[in-house]
View 1 (tube, rainbow, N blue to C red):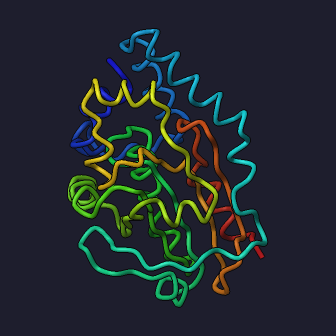
View 2: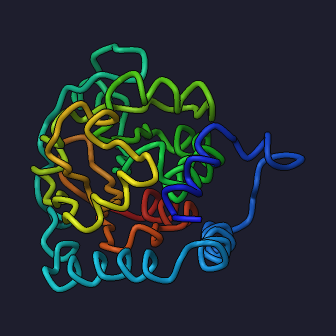
Length: 239
C-alpha cells in the first residue's frame, strides 16, 4: 500500500469513526502507527522515492528559510470551506492566530494533525487566540474535509499556494513522485485546481495581533509536526 493509497482509505474516516472516540495519544504515537502501516504495506521502491523527496528538500534547507520569529506575516484573504472570505485582519482582531499549513485531505498525516489540533481548539480559543488550517486544495476539497472531520476552526484554501509561497514553504513535487501520485490516483491538479504540482511543507505559525510571528515550526519531512501541547505552550509564553 502506497502512502497516498493508504491516505485514500483514511480521508473519509474521522478518528471517531475508526475508534470508540477521539484519539488523545500524542501526535508522535499516532504518526508512528501510521508509519508502521506504511512500512508494512508500501513497496520498498515507493518508500525510497518518498525518502528521496524529503532528503532533497532537506538539502535545500527549505524549512530553515521560512519566515522566522520576529518577521511580519503577510496579510491575507482566503476562502474557507464554505466559500466565505476570511481575512487575517478579521482573525487577528480576536487575538493571536495559530496558522497551520498542510498539504491536503489526501495526506493521512495532515488528517492526524488536524484532528489532534481540534482537541485543543477550545484551549486555544480560551487563550484568546484563533486557529485556522491552510492548504492549496480547492474550496470543494476543504468542504469535504470539514464535513468529514468537523473541526472547530476554518479550513482555508490557498489558491496557487500564494500565501504559502510568501511564508517560504512551497516546492514542486518532482516528476518521479508525480508518477507515483498518478498511479495511486492522488490527482493534485484536480485537488488543487492548477497544474503546478506545488505543495507547502507542513508548518505552524503563531502570529501576534500586530502581525509579528511569535512561533514558527516547519519540517521538510511531512511526518513531523509539532505536538498540540507545544503549540499551546508557545501560545502562552510567546511575547
